[in-house]
Image (tube, rainbow, N blue to C red):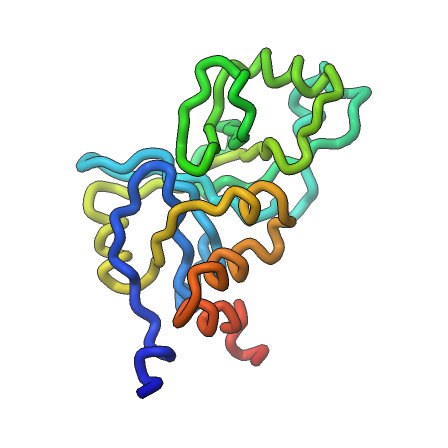
Length: 196
């Protein structure tokens, strides 16, 4: 009766742009263990995403890259993935930023960077509204689908309050819990099984 509860299986949804893919509790990979990835591109040529819940080993801030922000409170930079760590992206819910690309659940990626800097310098709220990432994750043609078929990823529509308003530490667990069973049970799986 309960055997399916403990057998981690992908829900086989399509990882369309704007959805999140959530690492299976059994995916033991340095870059993707307990990760939540916002899908940015999904097509027959390959897939692109931003890891939402990883920090750099050394704390980094946007202020270090944008000197116009030197006198502003530190704005954290997160590790968006293992590829092209010089690529800056930002995920936000600020409709007024021109050229923003809509995702889902009222979220956007990128947009007019000068407008975003002005928004910050004007003292408008950024907590819970925008996060900045260096790097991204990508998969070659067929690679992500193969990983989904191997039950490495669970696919979900994003929950804006979890992605933007809560700290990144509990994001993986919260994304699974909100999906109900059996995901709520899987969320209890430790990131290092030997620590259980």
